[in-house]
Length: 160
Image (tube, rainbow, N blue to C red; front, side):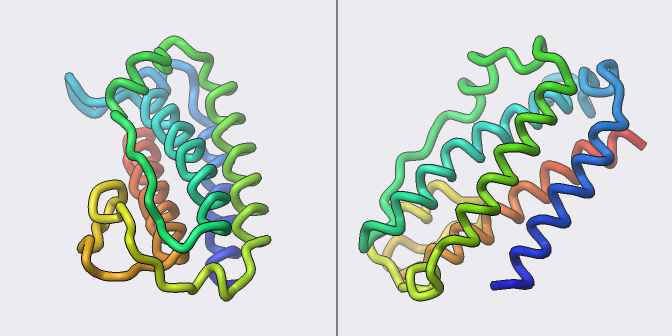
């Protein structure tokens, strides 16, 4: 678990430093027409942090991992992240993930590793798990970090 926490912290701190070096104009760019801009990707990661935050906390008091998903496209559209100031977006993303790091570090290991069933991880995570298989909170949290890394890779590759 300690290695995971170190990786999580390193990921958010290194990405934050690189994101801070990007301009407002770079935040507006998207890889191609119809794709999210860097601002919209950061906004999506903020939405993901908000939705996962409640899941990480609630899972400590339940025997299942039953969580609602959300319509990512509609959330990004409704919040108009493309109009938000770049620096404010990345500061919110950074602060929220530093808080999630704290939340995760406070989860007792037996809670983290406890097999859960039923769950909705067949529908709400990047790497789905069959609905008939038990899954752990650890799996959900590790998937969150991988999802974040994937999106950071999109943004930081475009900014080069």
